Amino acid sequence: MAYGRRVRRRGVPAALAVVLLAGAAACDSGSEPEGKPAASKSAAVDGDTAPTRAPRPEADPEQVPRTAAEARRLVQEVLAEPEHFGPETERAAPYERDPARWTVLAEDCAWRTEGLPDDVLATRTRYFEIPAAGGKGAMEVSATVTVHRTTLDAAWEQARMLEEAVGCPEQTLRAGERLTGLASLALAYGEGANETSDDSLSERGECVSDSRGGPYPYTWDQSTFGPVVVGVSVCAGEKTAAGDVAGMSVEPLVMMMQRAQESIARDEPGDTGDAGDGTPRTKEGD
Image 1 (spheres, rainbow, N blue to C red):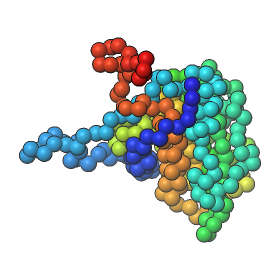
Image 2 (image 1 turned 90 degrees about the horizontal axis):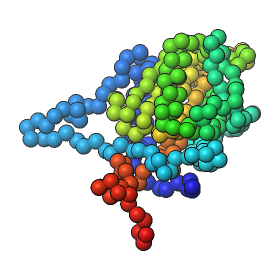
Image 3 (image 1 turned 90 degrees about the vertical axis):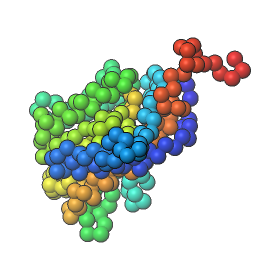
Image 4 (image 1 turned 60 degrees about the vertical axis):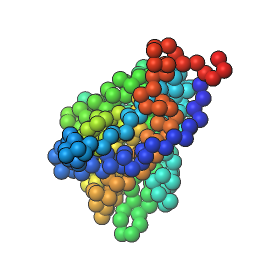
């Protein structure tokens, strides 16, 4: 199975950016996100019809990875590089986490690494640093792509993350580093402004480090498409506003979601691959 990206632009960046920023604002305020404008939600009034929603992007079962090797290729294809966080962004040391391991939140609210579970075909995380500039402190950022065996497995990852913020509003990342005041909010497809990903989740709080100081604004944004989960974290430095940090995750997350959709989405959303009478379509010339 080939995983060369088929270029199909559907306006993903602008739409998904709206979702992330709306979710971030709601998460910061503790309120529910505002829905779409009333004009788009209302029934026809005085002969005017409501705008038609764009077809929902759908993962193509024939394109999604079925083996670990296929999933690793897709992860490599989707995962963000330093330039997606800005021209000054540098690789951190270490740059990539061991792809045979992933992190799990233990009962004591401390993160630990362990071998991949059966429901994960492949995962990889990259770490970056944004140097101090303009009177603001250095930032630590990361990007993660995980390919699960099924779409349901990806949905469960989202659900676990929501539970983690509720059960562990303070979490230990590693010795001398922790997160505090965590709160999260999820938007399923069709909720709020989410018309691009199967599920979009935003987590907000603060990061504290024995070496870097703090607390500083912290964000984690995560979206799913089929069995693929993409995520971006940002731990800010001194004199950085929470709103500025929330916006930083948008571009790399949008880019990774777009790459995932270009790789595994149906050519036409809602296309089941049959001829309309239940019989499979055949390739031209068959």
